[in-house]
Image (cartoon, rainbow, N blue to C red; front, side, top):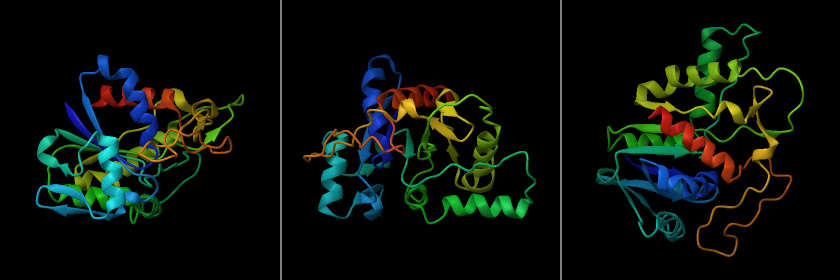
Length: 230
């Protein structure tokens, strides 16, 4: 399967992780990325998503190896990763009405860049679209409860309430990367690097206080989990 991976700085871990898996993978990934909100200017042009600024055009061209637009006819499926997409945590120890859960699900999805690109992409293709939310924040692993049911419950609600209507599917973060049920093991945030887009900051290490971006090992694990689900 040939998959277009569209995302912001968070795809850096996936892109480098894929480099360690590509020879053994049955899937071909092409990465279209830009740091921050660089892809906010993507617009629909016939059967393509096209960047409307020189900066974003250069960025996706660099990350994709020379492709400056996303033609949906060239791919079998699409993965939107990062792009402000968030997980939803719904503790089972507390009662929430259906209305509160629905409102919470919409709040973490609507008006986010991921949702905007999803709507644009869905307007020109019926092919499978998968969502990967921003990694859970890094935290030091401590003894105690590591149950992920509240996280998994939230992912189910996001799929049922929001994404199912657009025939899209949220892919959960691998269980083995999660600590305390709502965080990423800090080991996966160590040594994370900036997304390479063709400038002086390419592959620069993130500051040690950055616990939101993940490293290559996390990216490889995420993709292995993803490939098993598609």
